[in-house]
Image (cartoon, rainbow, N blue to C red):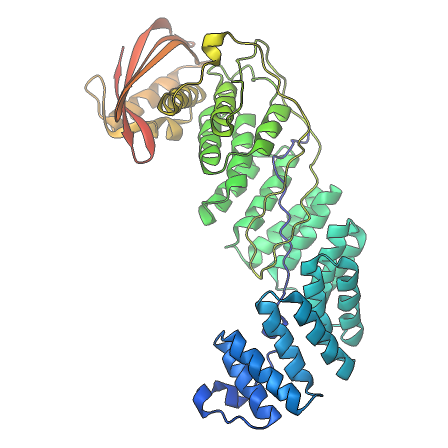
Length: 481
């Protein structure tokens, strides 16, 4: 069964500065600017190149302009002045200069290419495609022009033509990772997930340091229902880019799918703390409409409470009385917003905003907004219970301070003891009732009734967790039964 993704990333790699491809300078441009004479058109042009190299754009434009005044047919001066205007964000003047360069030299492929880039930035896709096509007519091996034209075709939804252009680009230059990733995006949007994964994998093989490649492949795996593989890719993406908030949301959804509830809550906590997203909230409601049977700690409700707190929702989400079956959904369409850089970062696209809140009514006391420390402590307790119940000992250990003590055991001995208990027990179920939280600055207590059952033991009793607030949040430093 296909699993719905939270986001699908479209990382279109544009090669936008033709000055990277066509740097028209002379040996004199390497000299100190003070040593470059100015008087002839070529001398002003060379000095303009030197100023441009130093990012002194105003002086570069002045020198290119002087070169043009002396020689109105100085094609390169128009072209490089256009590049400089483009660096300043002056698209209108850049297009005017590229156009003048083309009028003087109708075979100036780089001018067509850069003008196409500028039209693309303005959203004039038809004109941009026309310029890329003209550059390709002049040079049938112009890989960058094929690649950028393919990006625009993909934005237009013309995936057949986009893939054809990416194929040509890869044929000409098979060692650019981004071209494979872009083609993978097109296959992904068409639903050809196997081919998309092949392309993302090739991109990773060529350049294994780009987080977005792993994130995109993870989404393809998640859509196929291969959640374990998706999580591996999401984890690598987060390792490379810890600020990739969309991937935290995606991994959290995948963790919920494989019943790793503690880790799911941890990812949603990180994501909502960094960037609470209404789209992510609606997506979670849509694709996890009710908690799974194994979610006895009701982590689903804790995640909804996170969104409610961060998004200032009027109503808190209640714990539903029924249990949902596994969620299935179709693939969301990717964003058409390109990444205009040689090395892209992941760009989040909005999820399908359809779907309404599905929650039970709760009494007024349950609807009261708790203080933020109490919410964070409650989430820690639920994560602690869920990780122990599911056997996720890494997350379980992370709920404690390094100096934790209980029953004469330090943290290492405690986790080892608990791991042994788990190995000997089956069907562990934990529920927490009547949770009461009190805080006093950087310390707190969480008191509740714990119901525990397994193949070895059934028990119900009062438990108290004593907590301390550290830099990375609340942690348990003592357990009292």
